[in-house]
Length: 147
Image (tube, rainbow, N blue to C red):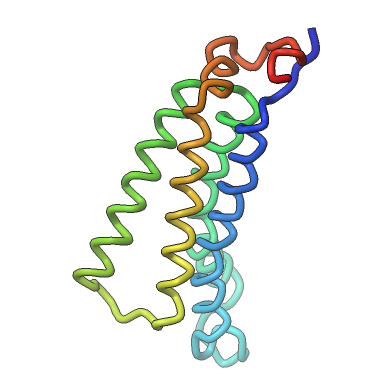
């Protein structure tokens, strides 16, 4: 029996990973235009700069781990955690839009909205019938099952 993935899980990969790319863009933009960090006149150097980069780019690690366990390992617990994460993400973006905690450039909002929509579509794909069968069998399905 060949290990394969249903079309909905493959589409999940595309939508979810595009959402992760969209989530990185505002942080990368903010980093590129932070005064002093890239100009060499910053107090950040050596270990301080490494710590700065860690805190700027480390928030992408947990979502990518969830993606790995959902998409590659057919882990049902990770699927439910991912659903909770996406719901929380949608609520956080909505709350931040209604009650801004800090000033954000207007150009970030379309990216954040697209990210949330992409993640919602991705999670929805995980609850289609072919995906549910795949998760139930832990990723071991006969290739003709999805034909």
